[in-house]
Length: 476
Image 1 (spheres, helix red, strand yellow):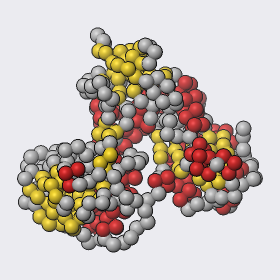
Image 2 (image 1 turned 90 degrees about the vertical axis):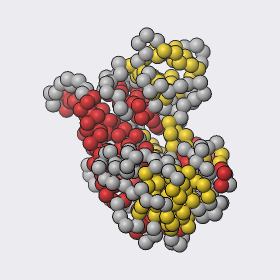
Image 3 (image 1 turned 90 degrees about the horizontal axis):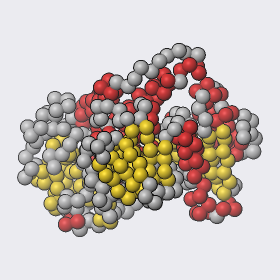
Image 4 (image 1 turned 180 degrees about the vertical axis):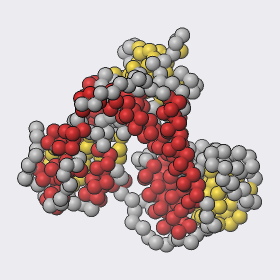
């Protein structure tokens, strides 16, 4: 966060407070999409003004992806310690030192932040600290100063949503940013929402020793994933004694003497010390001048064409404010795309289905492309074949004592349409899955590739061998 004099409280690095000016590109928002656009534009010899009221790096670095995954790794260490005897290692989990966990988490964020600040501190990029507003088709105003660009990129990110009538107080009813700053492990927690954010925090708190209940209005956890993946996560959560109630819309919350009481459909109540509201993120677009300049807004989102142009002047939009997957790496790639578009490089449009997705709960979920249901809806059920490779046949998974599977979805006599994985460390396999999907590979082509033994990556190879008609280590 920057103080009024432009000195950054986290790094001590001075950021620019110029008296406005003219640039090739003015970027409003310095999160994953905004800073990627700035860095790529500078590489392409374009001058940039990068404007943000908060820290460089945005939600992902400071209040989202990075700190959350640090907590999840600490949770993994806690579980490994608790369960170490099954590997012949005698160890006792004495407890969770949240001060130490938070110091570790904050240290990771700080190092990455300093690195990013160093990257952005270059002649072609002018960093402007302050709250910006679009006041013209080519102008953003910050603290009375005007920054004009031949092109403007809107990258203002997202905020933690709540639901009507549910007020987040930051103490008993909290959002993810509050959960990341807790100085204690709550004795019990209600997680409202069984999507990515909800299951990740539920996983962390359970590993840290809390009693956790997830409330989800949809019929299953991680409902955006393939249905078989959802079932696997639910089985694992039952085994871990993480409680969840699906198909149960939330009705109200009341404060009790020691915490909160949530009421769900049917009158059932759940009590806990805290309630985490994890019902998704909303686009940060209100009161920023977008609509006044003629930009089309739908439910808060900025509408663009496939080249991320808003249809107004030379204004583009990237990241969480554009309808679609709200993922940091999506915004990052969109930022690069728009910088290259402005520079006349004519980049290929980004295929939304070709963006990898990872949920870092235990077990981890990673996926690419279409679910089986979506593939059948698009191509017809008789034209789709799917195959599940159980990790029981994978040596490294046996070593790790993880369960799960790799599910492949293909078009008959055609390419792979979807790769869906559940189990420990599956997120590390999604890179190859992305190449398989985006290069429209046939299972027979992937089956020819050699996968190192013993690795979990080998599970992908075995799955494709089976789908290509030559199963070897395939277990039912």
